[in-house]
Image 1 (cartoon, rainbow, N blue to C red):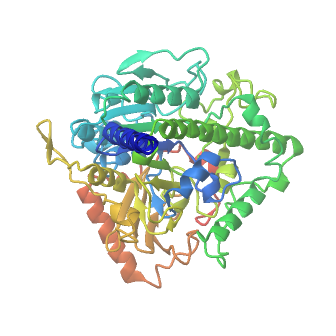
Image 2 (tube, helix red, strand yellow):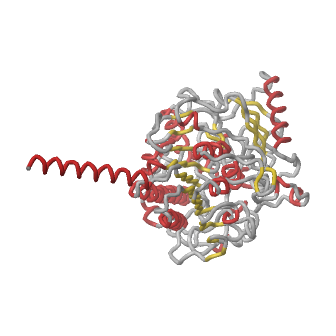
Image 3 (tube, rainbow, N blue to C red):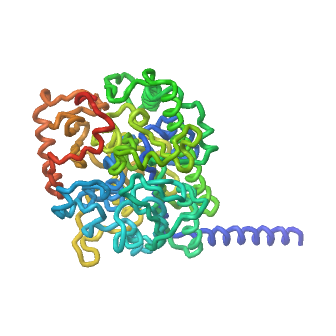
Length: 566
């Protein structure tokens, strides 16, 4: 009888265990969840997995379970990148050939479809496709792809949203804009709302995203979540305890930080250990030439920046911990990226700030810098260090502006977890990757309109370990603010308008010269001409309007480069 009792107990336990396993399996959606996390204006080497000296333990842990991409390229600024990310198309096709807040009368007056400043109707978004394929679709954070009726993310496929419509501004609840002509408007499901009194951007975007996911957690439908932080975009703000964590950490100055980051990238194998052909930006003063008071103030701004990134990493950990606690992590693809290089623009260059009146209303005393009613910024010195050793930073089609960190975790166990992929990858590759993973197809028509074909390629062969690249035989073009580029293989042509460049096409070998210091046009004229021809074809296919001669002076006052090599 005792033996029979034991056997019955074993059988009951076994049945119960199997039943629980079956119930757990049945509670999981059949398709994977998708989580895209975008940092705003994050430098290439700021996070620890990419050689940074700022604490990012959540991203460190994510990197161990992911593939890291060192050759990921985006658009030069915020909204163009976001348009390409969500549509798999060039920013001009998506309507963001120009940023809505920039004053380009020659473009606006001609009503060019590629330069409307908001998401066009000849592209379809990831959430629009996935929502019609059985997905919940959520977004919190920065939208920056249009405002008003028909242009809110709630109108473009997201069923639950809490977003900032514009490009940036205060991270507190006071809604102080980047400059007087701009404004800050938050919407929830398409209706304008005021942020709560205790609002802090990274905190509340995370709170809302977790609430959206949790609300429908039991209905067995997968989700697509777009968590679009406004950190680390200026003005730099973060709770004081996070600033205090980095007190004194950047007293070394930006010249030393530039070298530290370069050496870290060499140690990771992302830059050749023997590469030393880099040119310092002469528009940026040497740290040693600054007064003690200047150094103290500038070092504090970088302390705020570091604390802001640290807080965002903590917020990312909240999301990942939630997914793990609720059994969703293993069935979720997680993508982390930045939208462009670090931001080297100073506040006075934003339209409306040149007279200093608005900026004088802030309390930028050392003790208040980074707290409410302050306006801290990264500036070109720290931005150049954060993009070390690449040329320039945000807004430029040089590598410092369009090269960004990318980490992708696949659902389940990855074959090459923790490994680097060094091939060329483009932001337009994200959409076709997600569509292939979820079994969704890209429509030729959507809501009665013809859709522009995707230009990106699925990264699944690379993520599954079956291939090392998806762009072995094709190239990619860029254009923004008259800054142009085309990359194919290790070759790149670059045209920067004066005074940042010669105003003419230059040719660089990125494998030997990642800092874009030596124009090799004379040595390889055939390659240069081939790439110029390819750029012209890119421009034709993607509705690029050549507006040479109308370059806005927005960035000139900040950098004042002495020559084309600066």
